[in-house]
Image (cartoon, rainbow, N blue to C red; front, side, top):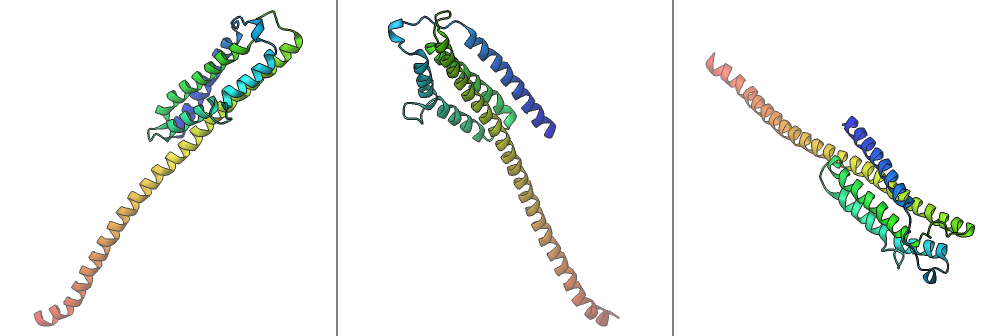
Length: 195
């Protein structure tokens, strides 16, 4: 069982690194051209816009909450974790690609950025990477927790089954003892009358 869990976790981690490579590729592509009239402060807009994207307008309903809700609902399923990993990885991949698409809306055109803009844009990029790493930690943590809970549930069910069998065995022993006691009480009378 441990080998299966270790294999599953290793496969998940490898696939997450593969997704990270795909994400870096998506970030490396040229951003769409922006209208200079709409772009008075690209970096501030990027940080603010990405914060709104991840946390929502109200600070609670953004992409992070949606991602956490999806992952939580996924692992509440009673199926084995190995069958749920694929869905989680797909959801994580979609989360990363959606973040890249949102970032691309705020990224300046290649070659048009000044050093100050680049520094602020870089800060925005690192904030996105931090959010993505947090999402990865959420998945790994949920895998560990639900695997542990499901193991506990299986053990409890087995212990309940063993307890039920022991109860039946105890009743059988009590009945057997009662038969022997009845037999013991009748033997002296049987010996006196028959011999």
